[in-house]
Image 1 (cartoon, helix red, strand yellow):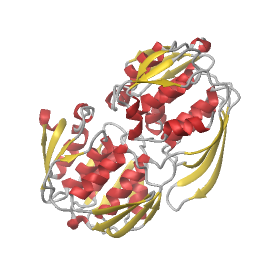
Image 2 (cartoon, rainbow, N blue to C red):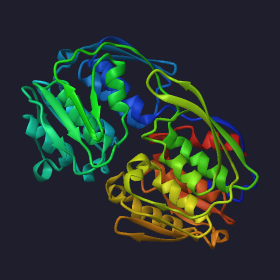
Image 3 (tube, rainbow, N blue to C red):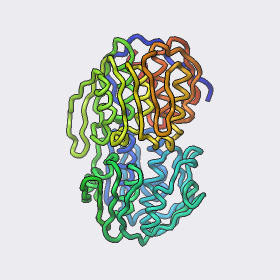
Image 4 (cartoon, one colour):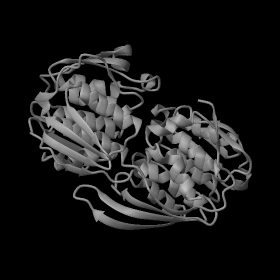
Length: 430
């Protein structure tokens, strides 16, 4: 545990970085590979703790998965090949693993129990257990299925039309994964469009999915076939370097092979709206996910308002966007971001408290925060904590770069959840 002294007072960042593979796509590649028929090879898989929790759970369900360099080779046996686990499935810190896994287990005719770490134990699960229960799965847990441990007995499920109260890719994906095993058609209607990696991946594995506006439908009983997947770099990891390049003086950073899925590029739209010097070169429209190189230079930034349908496209980037806003001229308002309260930490309170310790002028609101950038030179130093949240940890490491005095980070180890080489990559740019 202990304290880790961060690099401060940096005068320039220069160079190229290849960010780790996209976390959302890495999780889903293993899940779909496991329930498809035949072999799936995944290149560029993110070897972070969250994605390895997904691998470990599927091994317990009887799926053979080999690690070869940066490849995962998954020997799929089809839906029916999954076996009842003999032990409890532990998802670690991974919300994606537990919520999507419930959708897969909802259609299987056996019993399984899911647990996770302390943070998972506080995250709301009725958002998936309720619709899966409506489809016919039997799920129980603390407070009527709100919290882990959760036990599920699946099988014999039927399609539903579900109007999701929040735009959440995890909720939508969980229901669609159940829908692929259900009798009839399953439809999810969202209030705003959430990231669409699951829909793209169903097609990549040979399935069909019907999208109309904010509604997505799948037909049950479709067979999926093993395939090859190239995982693009994770824009949520790239975001930390995009902000570092914009706020550290005399900087120019190029991030290579980053996924540019339009449901995920809200951070780029916000940075452009704030006046960032950012250029994008699309290198390959991979068959299913667009990819490109992003170059960011030191920027003169101005405040903006962030809310509405933009929020699902950048929910994971809001902590680092809050830091960016502290270095912009004028006021930045983030609203409609209630979802931040139910992430690895309550990210509204955590961001406000930790950045305030370093000298930022930032206040929490019920659904977001207000950031005043006019006193941007006041970043001093201090002792800050990730609170066990990987995105908070990386955001604070970037904040330290522009601090005048020493900054110590508690719980640095949280960062390895999504970006094990983060500090090594940061060093390369100095």
